[in-house]
Amino acid sequence: MTGTGPHNPLSSRLRALRPAAFGADPSGERWERIKRSPNFSDGVFQNPVGARTRPSGGSMIEFAKIYFRKEARARRSPVGRVPLHATPLADLAKPPASGLRLTWMGHSSVLAEIDGRRVLFDPVWGERCSPFPFAGPKRLHPVPVPLAALGPVDVVVISHDHYDHLDLPTIRALASTDTIFAVPLGVGAHLEHWGVPTDRLHELDWNESAEVSGLRLTATPARHFCGRGIRNQQHTLWASWAVAGPEHRVYHSGDTGYFPGFKDIGAEHGPFDATMIQIGAYSEYWPDIHMTPAEGMRAHLDLQGGEPSGAMLPIHWGTFNLAPHPWAEPGEGTVAAAAAEGARIALPRPGEPFEPTAESIPSELWWRAAATAPAQGWATSGDKGSSPEVAPTA
Image (cartoon, rainbow, N blue to C red; front, side, top):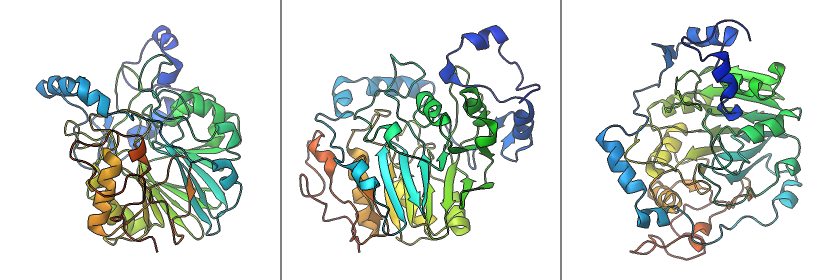
């Protein structure tokens, strides 16, 4: 891509000094396309509805006091070893009987096997979600499967360019394979900078689709923001994704606050056999850009036309410490929200493959073995067993 990029560009010398993990700014034809986007105005990408992206002023000071409080910090991490699934590679070696299988690798990374094709969502295999190897949020559990052992992937789907979703070492490793990448508009600049050939990129605006190996991938709206460098220019888009094969459909939320557009996405691209919904890293200090478990369940129902159909896989929790809430709270909250709605949720350990349309899906409250119990005790019964409040899996 050549030509003039965003206004007030960094000098070439400053660009050369910044870490490679910062990526690259959109320029040339890519920048011209961004400026033509109906979702870009006043020099930035816009959310479908207004959103506050971070604490400010007095709320920032208040947040800092809470975030760094000693007793609160202790609750944000597991106190024991996070239990991983023991035999992921052996299980993945067998094809899914139903034609659809999901394997949550932790946080928002999910391998989806759909009608004979393999889609890898938001792969983060790095040790830290940070531009620096020595600082930033560190993994709370190992990656369940080595990336090199995962086998061929037909398409890698990226939701946005934050470090916990777009990981430099992981992308560089995948760039050496034959996989195709589907990314939101502007994010391709980072991938090209890191060695992904242009002809292996599908760069999409909201409501645009690409066909890859018999799958239809559509970038759908989300309520979030972007940015990797010191300046947060909002020049790369964020998205959720709908993926449809000949027989099955899945949805990956990426990062998003709740907004009414989930109903439109469901009406246009659903209903889905499975949804992968962000339910962690929420806070009252950024209520518009991340969903609580209750909001995540509401989004799942909206995507399914208001019915508790399909299976919901909670994502964006358990792997990194990114918010003030206790480590186990997103899991507990999702169980409670599912019970209230009679919805079907999957609760796999990291690395545990499951088939969303099968009669039985994972329901063990595995995180309790590694978490500090709340002072008032767990809201549902059973220390290690499945919750009686989770909706039936038949």
